[in-house]
View (cartoon, rainbow, N blue to C red):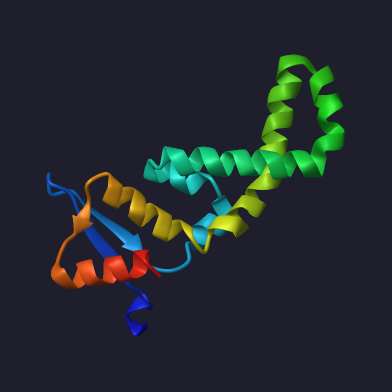
Length: 129
């Protein structure tokens, strides 16, 4: 298990495009939440995380929902933004320990394969742990 310290998995697709995946916790996820999957093109997990952010934020600021609704379209948009911003740290807390593994699986499903035999062993050990 020592190999997991400061390791990046190297995944390559058939076109030769290389992607690097950190092993372990995703610290930017803790602070930026759903923005990280959006930047990496992982739309599925972006939608899941933004939904969780919205649900958590709605539970925290649900009492303000009527105020936002009275504000018309602008009020609804501003309210939705506030609700998602409040819930984002909670979604980050849920996913920052797991997102790198989810992203590695996402890349594997898109056709990215480990670049060497050693990388392959580390990749499948990491994915199945």
